[in-house]
Length: 221
Image 1: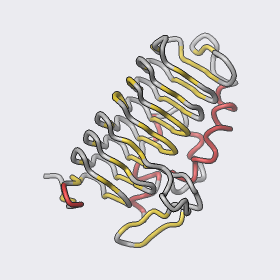
Image 2: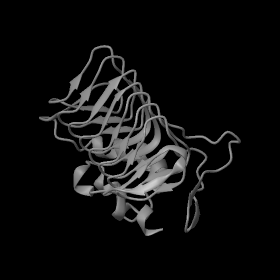
Image 3: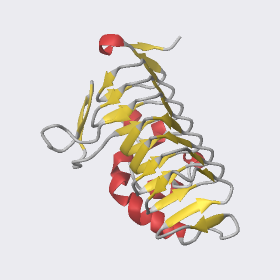
Image 4: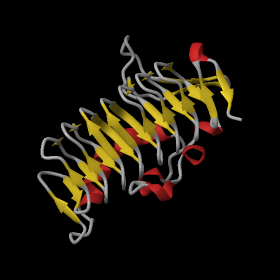
């Protein structure tokens, strides 16, 4: 189970949310805490670098935000991030330095580490995306099971009950998700792994591997 732990998935120097991870073992433990953390952190951000816009919304002055984007708080958009045309940020979202939130992309209760890209028609809910993770066009996180039962993270070495009704995907640093893929509830993908386009992914996928058709997983050369 160690490969699913925070220490195996993320470089915590690459997020403004690093203090939130303290004391936690698995990343999904943070999902219920994102909202309160944003409000606490936002009120301490330096006013010469961040501007408060609306209730519990802090946007770095170096960030680029399209006038057609919708942003609901609590939310922090960090330095040099880009929020593109018709992006929909529903709240409880931390967008990292240099991250891209693209056309018609929807965020809800998420942490995007620095340099994450969700640039085209993505839905990312109740999820954490590591440094330089990238979701191809149309790829989404599914965060609620069809029977509405609590999410369980499954792997070849056993299962972990999260106690959460809503959990999308935990993507490690430098994960690449192919276009039009669905990451089912309770998906955890290790650092440096690639997922083929149009894949349906669930459970734990190990680091530095390739998820191919028919759920075949091979090591990277």
